[in-house]
Amino acid sequence: MATKGEAGTAASPKHRWTHLKIRLAGLTGWRRSALLVGLGVAAAMALPPVYGLPLLIPAFVGLLWAVETSPGPGRAFSAGWWFGVGHFAAGLAWISFAFLVDAPRYGWMAPFAVAGMAAGMALFPAAAAILGYLVFERRLTALGRVLVFGAMWMLTEWVRGWVLTGFPWNLLGTVWVFSDAMIQLAALTGVYGLSLLAVVAAAMPAVLAEPVSGGGGERNRWMPVLAAAGVLALVWAGGEWRLAGAGNDTVPGVRLRLVQPNIPQNQKWKRELRWGHVLKQLEMSNRPAPPGRSPTHVIWAETAVPFVISGPSQLTRAVGRAAPPGGMVIVGAPRTAGSGEASKELFNSVLAIDSQGRIKDVYDKHHLVPFGEYVPLRSVLPVGKLTAGRQDFSPGPGIRTLVLDGLPPFSPLICYEVIFPGRVAEKNNPPQWLLNLTNDAWFGFSSGPYQHFAAARLRAVEEGLPLVRVANTGISGVIDPYGRVVWRLGLGQEGIIDSPLPVETAYNPPFSRLGPWMTGLIFIMAFGFGFLLTPIGPLGEDLDSLGED
Image 1 (cartoon, one colour):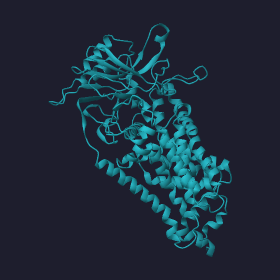
Image 2 (cartoon, helix red, strand yellow):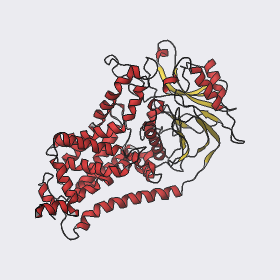
Image 3 (cartoon, helix red, strand yellow):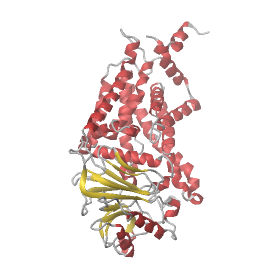
Image 4 (cartoon, helix red, strand yellow):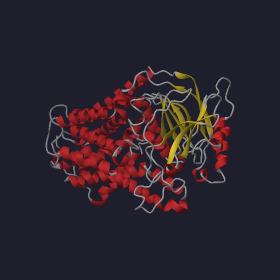
């Protein structure tokens, strides 16, 4: 039979959250670690394509309580790390598919790759946890701790985009991509502001475990949670207002044909099939269009031409047959350049080829994928890269704006170059649209292509530019500068998209102009508000007192 004190703490609805926090604080060893891993997995379920947003609440409330109740910084760090292991193991499980394309050779590496990525990426949530803990010791209010932790999570996401060339995949702000209205905030704050919003809103119920003082009682306990819900409503309403004024104008005289051949990765580079792949895409490129809607430019995916191009040749003349009269075909292909020693360099490139087979311009991918396109520390590590051939790709000089006949200036982005916020367009020579060529066939029918497509939509909103995406196996599409999907060809489908090109927004969004300065300002505001709130007591206060009003 429960004592009076126990009933007042555990049975009363207004103390239910306190009871949960006390129980979490009492967990040790493998039970604590397993719970935190599970909470991390739950948070990953809010990402595309699942969008299980309600799961963020127990995930981040539990993580925040685990950090708050840690007896020292080491335990706080481990709380964030175990959470991160679950979060990234679930969110990045799709990378295992790349090792199964050539399973006899690389399949054994799949579990080690996922585990290694999860363990490494988990250092960033761990850093957010320990930084938060160290600030919490300054005796912040419960609301202050929520704001500071959200700021630290946002900061470590930004750092993750730079460390060791960066990997800003599955930034938490991506959970809002299911709603066109919610992602409009990215025009102001970038995806990092959306991440802050997600963490703070999800973690805010953690304040319900805190004691309240003064009049109002239970009402005061719920005020921060209601305020967070109000902020979400305001963000949604602001997004709807912005979309209400958005137009649907297109660039006169430009009609694009996007070719998605749906060629499986394990067949793409087979010697006896390569010419057949080119011929298939030529046939798709030359299919008749409805009257008055003939394409002016044709676009193929990353490495759509499965041969190394070194200059004008019979191959480029064959590919040029896909170019409409007076237009050209934009294709992805590996290429070599120069002569002598320089010819040994291999690039993953975008080439613009006219109907005569002449190469009008070239962009070389500069942000290469470790182990996919080159092997770091090749002299030490006894493994090869996953892509065809033994030679590593060389990085190109960087972001470029291409200007081609009949097209507005555009910024080409190959594969995951599109996932880097604020680093998809030249600032001194701004483009009027973004072009993302990719080959997500490596990842099969997994969450990876959906997450990649969601990241592309956020770049369109941040830059105020339309984005055209052409993928070998999908997802291809045309996205307007507000992140709305105009046309889409699903994963695993073969087909073409004929579409006009949307125009850019009338003004550059603040994030496009300010980039990291805007991120820094948001961090300072969230951190400052949290840090300056009235202190109430030390972080290590006796948990038994939490049941008292």
